[in-house]
Length: 206
Ligand code: UDP
Image (tube, rainbow, N blue to C red; front, side):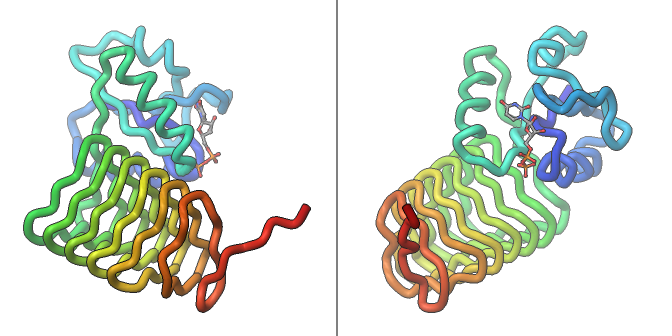
């Protein structure tokens, strides 16, 4: 049995990929807050019910875009002895020497070129790419169409918004957020949000 954790937008995008990749598996959604019994033909179970369901094996793919929640639920799975499940679309292109830690969700038309290192529970959404020699931390999220050029370092929990472009060789610090469509031409410090072209740190309005 494979549980897709999250039956909202992200999970409903990952479930069909799991169905295509693992046609013989018992595929269920895990969701603690949705309150629906079935979504798109699959049962929706709270975590405890997923653990209690009769199955010879179980694994979990965490299909929730918020990386803090992903980390918490990955921890929950680890404590329960449930391994993280990677899910990838058939159209993913992966070139040479790409090493990806457990639990990645790779959506249709993602491209990972060569000599890349990627941490735990990576999410690469539709049409995003990672170019050569990138170093990507744990719980990193690429929104649809995010463009990560060569030799870029992304710290843990970085979020790259839809269509944003990261120039070759830059470092995006841990927990930083790159806004939708941003063009990032300089390193980004940890924890800040950058937006625009060229991308600048967004000041907080108090
Ligand atoms: N969720 C959950 N357990 C948690 C936190 C979140 O089951 O501890 C579920 C939540 O009920 C919701 C989904 O995860 O159905 C997250 O959906 P959301 O639309 O917020 O985000 P997305 O699908 O875009 O990642």
